[in-house]
Amino acid sequence: MLRSVVIAAGFLAGGTIAVSAEEIDFNRDVRPLLSDLCFQCHGPDRAARKGDLRLDRSEDAVRLLDSGRQPIVPGRPQASEVIRRLESSDPDEMMPPPKTGKRPTSEEIRTLRRWIAAGARYDTHWSFKP
Image 1 (tube, rainbow, N blue to C red):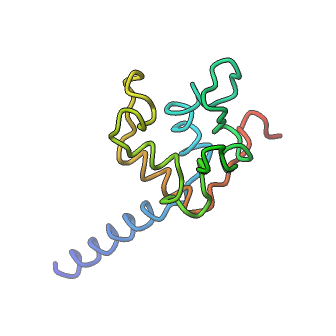
Image 2 (image 1 turned 90 degrees about the horizontal axis):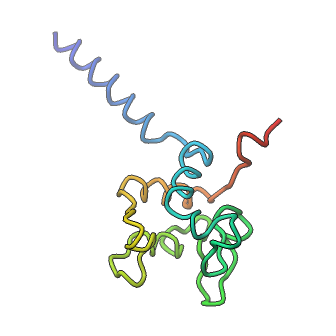
C-alpha cells in the first residue's frame, strides 16, 4: 500500500513539474494576452495607437522610448516598462487604463514575466506560416 502511495505521489509530482516547466509559446500564450490587454492602443492600427508604441512587433517593443524607458527588455522582466505598468495600481500609470475595465490576472502577468525572462521572442502568426 505504501509503495502505491509513493509511486502515485512521484507520478503526480512529475506531472506538476512538467506543467510548470512548460515552455512559453508566443502564439499560444503571449500573443492573446498582448492582443487583449495592449493591442487596442499599442497595436497595428495607426489611428488608434497611443504613445507611439507598438507591442505587436518585436523591433518596436524592445526599442528605447523618448521617455528613456524600454517597453520590453528581453531577459529582464523587472526592467521592462510593460510589466511595471501592468502591475501598477496608480491610475495614471496602470495599463490597460482604468477606463477600459480590463486588469491582467496575476497568472497573465506571470506568463508575460516568464516570456520576457526567456528572451521575449516573438513568432510569426500561424496564418502567415507556410
